[in-house]
Each structure stands twice: as C-alpha cells, then as structure tokens.
Image (cartoon, rainbow, N blue to C red; front, side, top):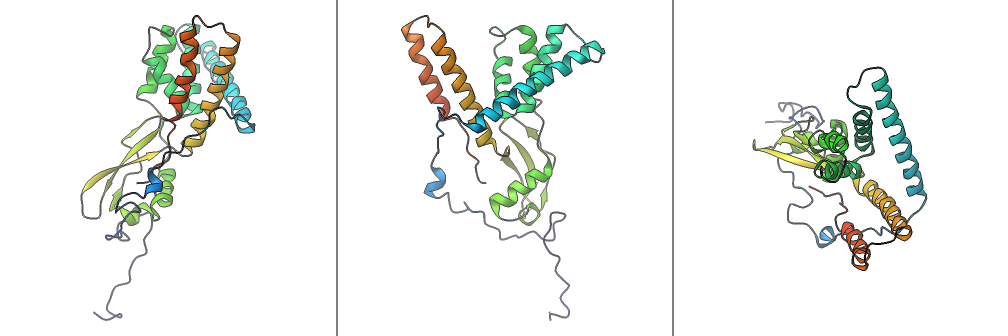
Length: 240
C-alpha cells in the first residue's frame, strides 16, 4: 500500500481506541529497579508551618461540619438526637479531611465498645462509602506514572471506579489484547497529606503524654513504640 492509499492515522487521545499502542511496555515491565523498592520513612517528630496550617484547616473543618449538621437538626433536615446528629457531623469532617481521618473513622466504627455508640454508628459509612476522586484526576495520574494517556495504553478505561477506599480506588480497564483487568490508583498527594496528619497526631500524643501521669512504667514505654511502628505504614505513591 502506498502512502497515497494508506488511510490517515488517527492521533492518540483520551477519547477512543484507535490510538492504542499495542506494544506499550510500562516502566516496570522488566521488574522494578532497586531504588523503587526503597521505602522512604518520614520523621514524625518534625513540626512546621505546613502542620500549623493543617491544624487550622482541621479545626475549621470540624467546626463547620458539626455546626452544619446541628443546623440541619434545627431545620429538620436531619433526624435523630442532638448527639447522633453531632456525631454525623464529625464523620462528615472525617470524609472532608481525607485518608488519615477516614482511617480514624474506620477504627471508631470497628471498636463500638470503646467509643460512644452514636459516633461508632455514624462512622460505619467510613467502611464502605468513601467518596472517589474524579476520572480526570485518575487519567492524569496514569499519564504521569506511565508516560502515556490511558487511551494509548488500554482499549477501554472506565472513569467511574469499581470501588473507592481511604487509600485509593480501583478502575476497570481492557488491555490492547482484549483481556479485562483492573488498575488501582492511590489518592493524589496521599503521602504528604498523611505524613502531615501523623505529625500533628504525634505532637498531640506527645503533649498529652507529658501532661498526663501514666498508670504504670510499662504503659508509658509503649507509646514511642506505637508511634514508631506507624512510620513504616506511611504510604508512598506506587507506579503501575
């Protein structure tokens, strides 16, 4: 076929399959390099301007969410006791503030014997009703991590996630050879956000420990170990 007879090729875009690159190989196709396997832990004892700003955001978010919930009680848009409605406002704030606080909500929901019943009941939605991030953000994350638009890598990419959790969400896709697959994406900027939140919690925990008389030497010595172990669970953004 000559160049004159050959139909014009359609450029790859985010809106169709004709631009799929069937020979695409991801950056880790031959296995991840050594540096990609290195887990970088963040020091939790640091506290600066970013943490101060975040503390202000946390305070304002909780205040607004609880006040909005109580206002809904006054206008009869929310039902239940004042404590129940206020607890729903607390969980509203958890969802707004992001992964660290959604994890806290999951802990509360999973420990009804420790926390007040209205709060643990309200926190149940943190287990399975976490709002997803939008499809445009998901496409851009794939473009940045893999170097090509989703339409160049997949025959089809579903923008609406199959499920969403506190750390990330899962999207269905179809590979160029027709196989169905899924791709899991971490939430944007999750590492920095969770590190900042953990530093605030570490500072608050250390302050409370200094001003609270421990029941025993054993309980006092356990706290640093708990905080140290949380460092290893601080997530890093993975590349597919």
